[in-house]
Image (tube, rainbow, N blue to C red):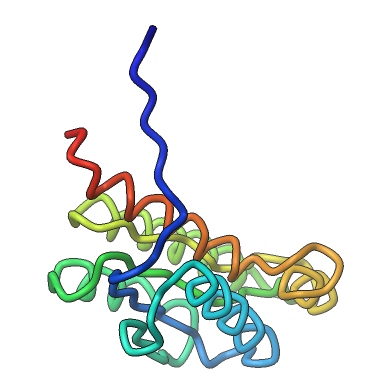
Length: 156
């Protein structure tokens, strides 16, 4: 029988940083609320959660990397939204923020979770920020909770 490792959904005593884009605040504020609700429901203390606001999604990655390497947090959650427009700007920003957040996670010893929406319309973003499609901020927080548990499991 193989050994199976799964994280527990317990955020008690864990310090979490949320890096949140101010751009598209109508959406990111809802994602942030979902993440906070999830963390607190799973035992995190409000005092152990820090929210860092950045101007836009492009600025999320460098701060995620800095926070993850600081050793002050058990997880970092990136929250933002990039909505397609009439120019290729969307493609550049979406690609770079995804790459940057992934790189931040690979270069640190704590989970860095991608909670950045990339949608074609504002309506799609709102659906994923607490309407029809659930709240992707809460889903990112749930992933962070599970990964924090796995990272501290002593399995590796």
